[in-house]
Image (cartoon, rainbow, N blue to C red; front, side):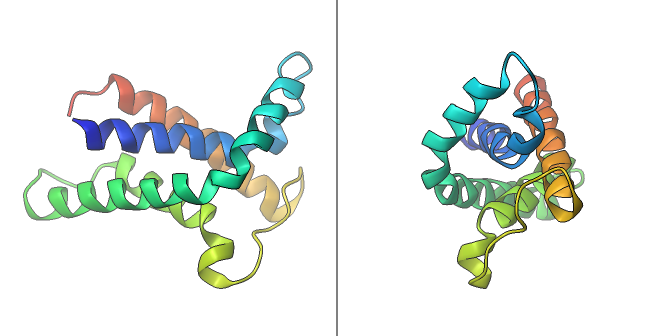
Length: 124
């Protein structure tokens, strides 16, 4: 139960950190979200580790014991890898922005937010 909650919250917070270039363009909510992410950004690697551990746990459980692999686990692993990219590879993620790979990461962040919210309302 706690692991599922950790996975869902890691998907939501990690998606928020990845999607901030798009969310910052919302006129009334953009500045507040930008301030929030600047405070949370130094701990993005912790969110990435939690996402990888929780998603990896559920991936193993559902491969060996469960009915099938769910999209929550796949998105959680991808969020964890995206947030830990600079620590794993030794180089920075693509620069956030409305073009190229930064846009792809921002759109994936929006998808991760939706998957995390869906996971909160889905029974284990």
